[in-house]
Image (cartoon, rainbow, N blue to C red; front, top):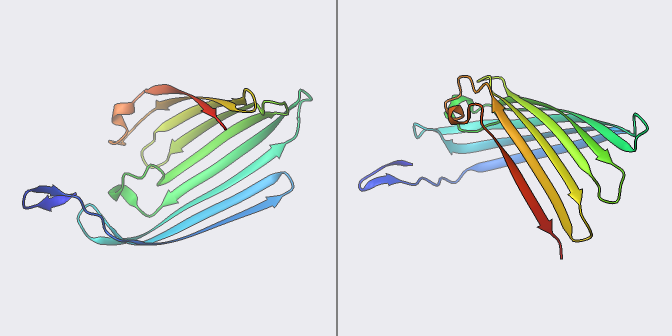
Length: 173
């Protein structure tokens, strides 16, 4: 928004973006990287900026490590950008680590645990997800999350020690 004669006016500038993504699979290890270069984005002061955003991730899958019929994947990820404090982007300097447990059953049962940490503001999130096909047409998803140690992030301060649960039932036809 910017000030206008009759009040705030919405500003919808045209920006130029160029993105590139790459993936590489080495046996049980998956590497992924994505980058976006943005030209012409206005900042909070109305100046035009050029920014870069990027994500790198490594995932390693271990097949049935304890002989109980499920696979375990370890996930490490980093999201960064040049946006700085000028943006409400949640992924400016954040790291993520998690585990995904996948059962080799008819329902494709999957449980994921992911922790994220914002290195700029010190906030931490914990997410636990459960997903299972109930039949050929229904998929059940449950996600629980908790936000800890919001720290210096003013945008997240209302979420200090907040959490929630999302239940989703998807039907396919």
